[in-house]
Length: 79
Image (cartoon, rainbow, N blue to C red; front, top):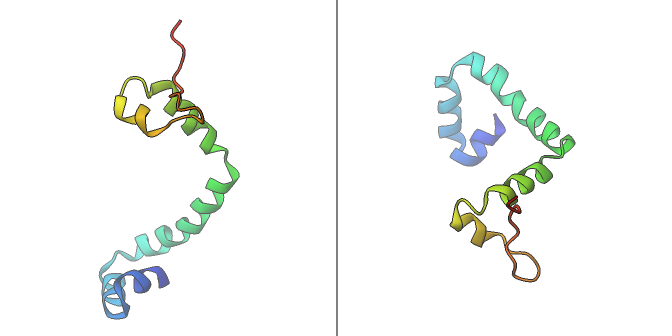
């Protein structure tokens, strides 16, 4: 609840929470810290980088965003 008031301001945050579905507030708001905690436990960064390197050659704009230390774009080797 405090996040809404920080982002929107006190009056707008309270108004948004009063109009929102109580079930969403009851289930959705506690899910945010839980999701952040689970994201810290999982090793998702490596999976994202692996997928990025594998598929970056299919979309050239993504390949140009990730450059290696030597300026070489890491892409999957074609067999």
